[in-house]
Length: 304
Image (cartoon, rainbow, N blue to C red):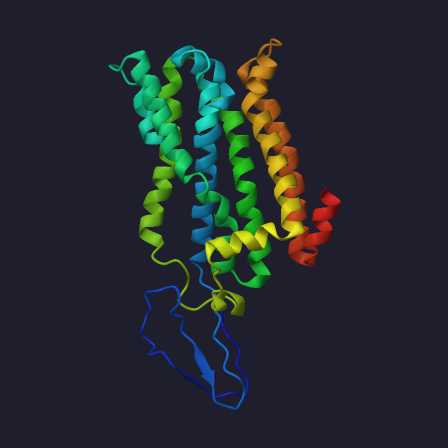
């Protein structure tokens, strides 16, 4: 973004070719006309690559978490009854999980490997939850933060939609489980390769806004106390948390709910996909609306 500076002589404190290596070392310029000094702001084209990587992580996490749900009957048939329900309580190291369908291990060992892989992914599960706002605040200017956060936030349900449309159609028997694990491993692995060659810092050298330059960070204990003293936060935590729990329950159990009524996996996946697609339409409209109007609170209240 080209900066427009009028009638002010600026003296930069950085040498042009100097590139700080830490998040707090931003390049700043000092105004010499008597006005207060302000940090320079700048946006980088690579922010879109960061957004793409974040979206891929969101989709990969959903694939790890709920990728088995549309074919729960096949999972239970291959590993034993109740396996799918237990997986939902653990949540998946996709590479490790793939080892559970190779020839050699006993049935008990296969199930143990499956649970181990699932648990590994569960440890990293919270990371995608903080990515939308983190990526937006660190790399995007205020005028683009709402759309960046919206794109990031709708990625998980979009990933679930694809899973429910595709997985039941390619996984129809026990021997197809290796294909499912390959797909689940390939997406995050490709994301990892891209991230290795593109992500080299936590934040840009020059921040996209003055608020990003402040870098205010509260200690964990103080942050938690501040949150739980806020009535608005508690209302959001309960309502959003409850809604997320209800959504996950429906996604996880839809196959079992409908299959006992005579419907096949493909149809139950379609029902889940339609439920998500409806939400995506609303989320897209709301995201575009708040990006243009900045009426965040009003939109939230009307939505509820």
